[in-house]
Amino acid sequence: MSHFLDIHKTDDAELRKIMEAAHAMKAARAGRPKGATDDDHPLAGRIVALVFEKPSTRTRVSFDVGVRQMGGQTLVLSGQDMQLGHGETIADTARVLSRYVDLIMLRTFREDTLLELAEHATVPVINGLTDRTHPCQIMADIMTFEEHRGPIAGKKVVWAGDGNNVCASFLHAAAPFGFELTISGPEQLDPEPEFVQGARAQGASVTFDRNLETAVAGADLIVADTWVSMHDAASTRERRHNLLRPYQVNEDLMALAKPETLFMHCLPAHREEEVTSAVMDGPHSVIFDEAENRLHAQKAILRWCLGV
Ligand code: CP
Image (cartoon, rainbow, N blue to C red; front, side, top):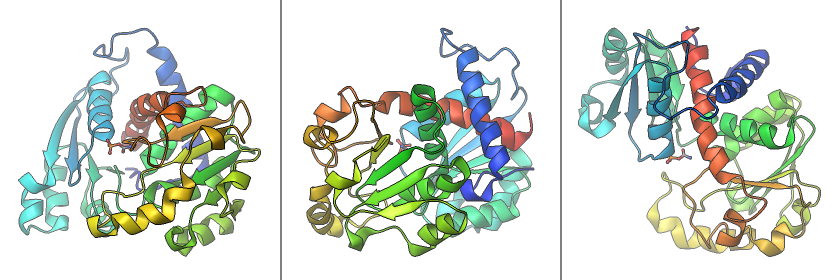
């Protein structure tokens, strides 16, 4: 049984296998209706629980559609509607759900919740985002880069803004996928040192450049994200906006990058805040391919977890 809890907890060769499977599965479906099942029905007879303690559009829909395309069934559950939100322990929830379903995808707040669920579940668990990491997103991002520009190894990725959970998963991915990561944001919002030290210890090239204009020189990929994440207190909004305003990705900034530089954002975006509409809808942007690839990358992750 294989959990997919974080990129750095998954063997490098297995990550590459998942990535190749995602590319192949996407290619195999080209031109088919979205509701058509894959030819091999790898999840036939399987039920997947999708548990959300936070809002979601992409994760909810892409996992649900992905399981259906592979011939499986889903249960989409809200943490608030379950006993999970009313005092039942995570361990007991894990044991009970494991008697009903073949795999659990969890989006939650605290990483500890995910880890406790995985410890006590007897079926695979997938991390659908915690306050600390978002590994499925980064698998989709790497897939998107590679389908547009080829292997990401040796390329320069620039993270613009808040050192949040998505940034943390980029740090986890830098060594296994072999890209250079430059983080450009205010020092006050740097990613946790553990993530940076861990990436460097694995051999990743991680640099900080407080000036986004110099950071994007030679970039192959620029990534932005919201300035206020779901787990950030509303009271921090003004401070975060003030700190992050110099890190907006706009047309003037993209003009300093290469013509072939890609722009990504995991979405949802706040247009005219962390990124302008001109960039989101402009020639560098691959944000909707990125959103689509959540589906294909996660289908490959589901198959890997279930060994099918
Ligand atoms: N990027 C992402 O995880 O989107 P959702 O929050 O809509 O799932």
